[in-house]
Image (cartoon, rainbow, N blue to C red):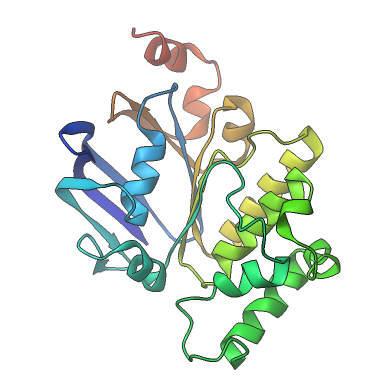
Length: 239
């Protein structure tokens, strides 16, 4: 579903990604690990079309090359990104946030059939959002804002969902709910990519793991390969 090959780029003259290969099939949850500054968020931004400079490589979704497309067209092509930090439109209501997530849906009407269906699906998946639909997003709890951010990304009906540090700042119970949602989306057939700092939690949900260091994939394999911590310790500490 998602195929990244030889990806390199960064911010102007600063290169932060080097020859990155990543392949994530439908119905697969791929976890990307790495220490701070390894390039994890830059990788997610590059896939979503937000990295300022991409010099080399290709990105394709379901066989379609999207490398040259801007971010909004990549969303229409099937890539959804949930950025770190519960990025929602805080001054807008919950329902307005969800409608903004349907930007790439067909039809100009904000109440088109496709948008009504997207709202219904979001409220079925996250009942609390239905209860709060008329409330401003900035007044939601941290966990509710994260649910809204995920629902907003799903409103565009993506085939690939990128979750950047989805557990950051959340209580353990809410964190478990977020990862249960990620597993459910995988089971529904999405290709899910999760960047996460909490290694033990990430390994519990992963189908496969890639470790990024200094902008390069330095190790990849099944989650069992990393459970004893020795390999990760060697990578994180420069061994």
